[in-house]
Length: 111
Length: 114
Image 1 (cartoon, one colour):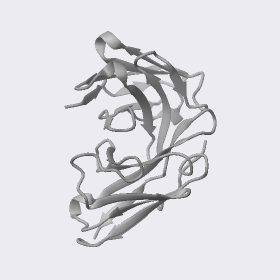
Image 2 (cartoon, one colour):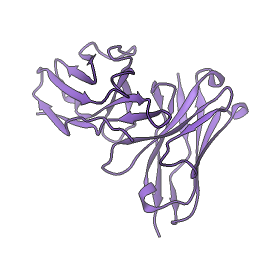
Image 3 (tube, chains in turn red, blue):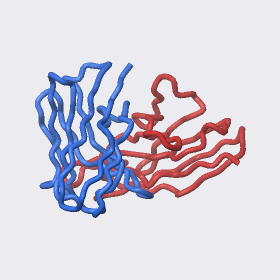
C-alpha cells in the first residue's frame, strides 16, 4: 500500500507558528484532496482540515491547510498548550482499487 | 449531535474471530458511508475498508481481503466489522469513521494474545 510521509515530531513555543508537511505521490495527494486529523492524548482522531484547506465549523482559524502538487502542509499559528498532540494527514489513493492512506503522524510538542 | 458508539474491548486468542459494532445516531445513517480504521501500538492509522450504508456495497484493503467483512443493519443504525484468523499483528484500536472523516467512534481495543 502507498503511504504518506510526515516528520515524526515538531515543536514550538506558545504563540509561535508551526508547519507540518505531508508528502505523497501522484496516486494520492497528486490527484485527491487531503484531510488533516488532530489526535489529542487518549482520544480518537478529530477532523481538523478537509478538502485541502477547509475548516469544519468549530475549528479555530489558527489552523490552516494547503496543497501543492504531491505535498500538503498544515500550519498552526498562535500555538497554544492545548494544541499538543499528534497530527495525521490522509488522502484517498487511486492504486490497488482505491484505499485511504495516512501519514505516520507528527507529534507536536508545545515547549 | 453525531455519535458513533462502539462495542467494548475484546481479548482474543490467535486464530479466533472478532466482531466490533458501531451504532450511529444524529444524522441520516442510510445516506452515508462508514469506514473502519485501526491504529496498532506505535503505528500509523491503517484503513481497513468501508461500506456504503444505502446499498451495502463494500471495499476492503487488499491486505485484509478474505479476512475482513463489513456489514450494516439499517434498522439498528449499526455497522459491524468482523476480522477472522486473528494474529498478534491485529492487536490495535479499531475505529469506525463516518463518510470523509467528519466523525469517529471512540475506538475499540482488540488484543490478540495466547
